[in-house]
Amino acid sequence: MDYFRYDNGVLNVEQVAVEAIADAVGTPCYVYSKQTLVDHYQRFAAAFASLNPLICYSIKSCANLSICRILSDLGAGMDLVSGGELHRAQLADVDPARCVFAGVGKSDEELRQSLEAGVGWFNIESEQELEVLAALAEELNTPCHAALRVNPDVDAHTHRHTTTGTRDTKFGVYIDQAAAIFEKYGANTWCRLCGLHVHLGSPIYTVQPYINALQRLHELINQLRTNGHSIEMLDLGGGFGADYETDQTPSAQHYADALVPMLQPLANDGVQIVLEPGRTLIANAGVLLTEVMFTKTTGTRDFVICDAGMNALLRPCHYDAFHFIWPAHVQPEHVPPRRDALLDLPGLQTVDVVGPICETGDFLARDRAIPPVHRGDLLAVFSAGAYGMAMASRYNSRPILAEVLVHGSQVTICREHETYDDLTSHELNPRTIDVTACVPTNNRASREAMNS
Ligand code: LLP
Image (cartoon, rainbow, N blue to C red; front, side, top):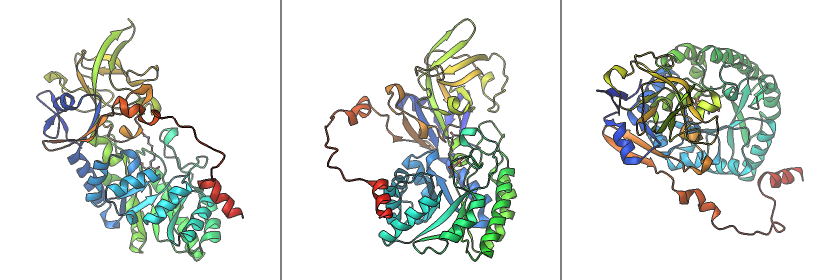
């Protein structure tokens, strides 16, 4: 499933030893395999091809411009959730018409920016948002297309922080409210409400939640059509799994086998099907490289202390997420035959792999069996391409790490390591400002204009 392989005990990404990258770039850093990303995209696109879908890469999963450019070159549109992501999509030469814009809290400025850019679909998450968007579209004389994000009250059986399709989450409008919203706004000419959007959560390891949601969406579409509304787009969101453990995740084909038959009649009817994969494309295409700084024992617990922690990869401590961690250079008996939590090879030691951050919650793995490691060894944290760098922070004043893209034997730094100057540059010139003379901006200004 990916191009990170051990050859004579040495971990390579495509044709390059990861140790050579660490030596050249420094640690910690993220390393991506272009071929893995391309393969994953092509497999996903092939599986759903009969629907002729618009595949919108979820930028939030890994926002690096070089990654966005690869996907843009492959024909992907983008799933955006902020003005910053639109900015990235534009820099990556993605046609805004092939972008969808979701998110519960879009600012007026972001809506204006997206209207002016010609974003294809606004995935609307509340009635108020729809009103504001329609008013802005009129003000800018720029009609737009909108899809209503509905919340079908389907449990995706994923982590509570990333469950989005149950009734009590903040996302979308409850599905039973949708028909009334179409009645009220369906005839608006500035904001043409003619699509539906769902996103159930992430990652989703079975097809059943999608099937449940699609059944509810079919009922809703029938009801809306009966009421005279035309539905021109259906966006099924993302959430497709990644192989955090070898072969533990449905393949793109497996998801497609279950979902395409349910979507094909709509596609044949001219409904544009949109899919928003993020993780399933990029997770397995990235590793985090981190160096062992020290090892120590309390007598009851052994620690491997690395130069990457929750600042570099938040997922283990935030979601209790599993990432396979293994040294980049191992004895032949320790070449891992697969990556999973229960890998049992002779001579492993059970340790906590922790970072340098001043919190007990700062860990990459707990009670994890790995080959013996020593100060200076390089570790690879696998399947870290999605929501790794994207959620990295400067906590403890640690500069954001570098990103490296490998293609065959070519190694490209696609984001430089930040420096200490980067940490402080926005703070060097404090300035006193006059707040009495300011004009209300953004949402407050437009609220007052709409009420007057
Ligand atoms: N579409 C919408 C509307 C979303 O909210 C998301 C993810 C996606 C698509 C892409 O989901 P994916 O295909 O990548 O699973 N930080 C968490 C994941 C948060 C997902 C947020 N929304 C993690 O590290 O697991």
